[in-house]
Image (cartoon, rainbow, N blue to C red; front, top):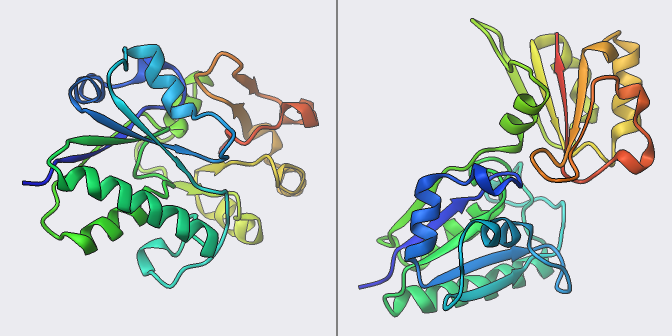
Length: 246
């Protein structure tokens, strides 16, 4: 029998936001796969888990995935961080490593920051593993997302009654005005590279006072700006969210 593969959301940064189920499974599995953006870098997901439980004796597999924004022909991945040739090679290496452990009957976990179902490239791995073995047992354990955490830290309600919410990734600026017009709450993810453009649009639409910026929500160096005009370049971070509440 093959082992079971768990995909675990470990939350945005605060180890106390790990779910009880996530902690239990991470204690039980023999092997943990840890994604990293740079070969020489450390894993934020792993650092969160290490603050919550002792990993001594477990096999830790580090999977390096270069950060890319590319297109894919797979419909399910059309709007995610799909792999190019280099990234595809890295994913394939991880798939082979993961499957070799599962094929020996080893239960293992793949950890990811936030929630695995929100802008997580894990699903490319998911599809490929099921191609190898459609009967593979895979369980996704949800985690607290940066969206929920940012709203909570800023004391904001994301929606009430029949209010509509839109969540957009960092490539949204071409259609942002239409979205801002149509929805009551708009969450803009990873705004660090497009912040100036976002601020210009919000000024044009008289929505600047409706926006809150949160970076590294739930982490020790968290920053919250309720007046986003005060944000300086040094305040911008990859793990950032702007919430516009009309």
